[in-house]
Length: 537
Ligand code: NA7
Image (cartoon, rainbow, N blue to C red):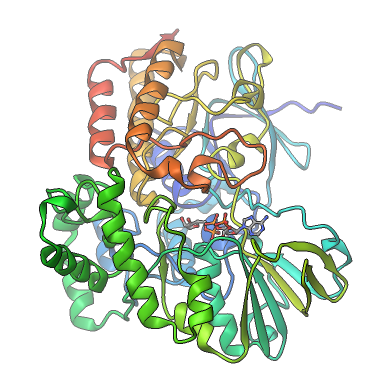
């Protein structure tokens, strides 16, 4: 029986960084009736699900947070340069409490479909509940709700435990549970590179199955002492002024010239400075053409390869760990590491090059490759995510005239600003495909402010519905393609091009201009009365 739906002004899907702040804005600033639906049994999104040993953000804590409340910023005490998963989760729990958001959040509530009925959105949950709302806003993140588990034959026959890094079990897979076990890790992206050194410390034996060796840049991680904490907590104005006018949503000073303008000595000095600074700075706070000119990129890639070579003693291991010459550095999302390369000098660690010796099947006792059988008690899939579109398509959204989003995006996604989709009135996608790439909490916060302003404008002017025009969407998609064609990003098979998922349309999923430029464009569009949108009463 179809029970009558509960009525709201807005339904928000997801209670991570995006959903929490969206709730606060819509409910506490605009006075709307809001329901936040969260599939998991707690808030936190990405930071609830990615509980694998060693999980840590690779953006610095002082800017991997909200800026909307100066008090929140100044009262929170980050303990280290790069916050650990449990610390970020604690922060988000604190935000939910501090802004009294929990009363608007329904945990354990998975959305199974959302349909536009010509007037409102009708949302159905796994438990069969229905909600109706004028606005539907997705805050499902780029990755977390769509882990990618490759179809390894025989995985279901494995007698030990296996799991994905992005869906880490609550019980029986803590680090101490892995002590003395024979563990296999498949995948050496950011997740694999974080967990491998930590698991190697406790496992009896660790076998890493690597498909593509990657450039990994040292985090130069450290704990935050009282003086640094005091300085950071009092730098609110400076930090956010810089973050909002930056390339990637975090303060950085790019080098305003080409790699090729400098002498070899100057280049090496600059690369060394950025390497010592640690993290994403090497790729993002760098020469302006590093991600756009293959000759410029080659200099940075050679520098990084030399750095890897300095850290691996065994020449046979080093050969396996050096990224291929035809992979530009930064074309895949940069990987940030701590102690990763030294791990391969340990006696209890083996590295299998699965391009040379591919995985054939999982057996009850381990993994069979073409040339060998690897006995294992635990298998960790660090195999990534069906990124950006995956989390949205899983919601089974259909818009005007019952057109399914999956149908509309069959050849690849198209949106306006990454925030709205033609044919899907009053649907807003925080960090959707086509939005800018960067420090996600900062990008999401901007999206949320912008969406709230648009909804506020509708409330003030009496409009019932808003929708991106097909022309605006086409123009935005063309702008994205033009920027992507100038950059080196499409050269890598990575999640940001969809190339990591068999059969997924290959297209750059982000607007590759600077975050600051994206912000300005969004603001200009709003100032021009929301150019590219049509409103209905
Ligand atoms: P990534 O970066 O997508 O990495 C996935 C890894 O898994 C990568 O090494 C892949 O190799 C490997 N992979 C994927 N599919 C397979 C199959 N079928 N067989 C063997 N190996 C495979 O995901 P992460 O979780 O590490 O990081 C995602 C983001 O989270 C990261 O970029 C940060 O933004 C935070 P490949 O390189 O494709 O050859």
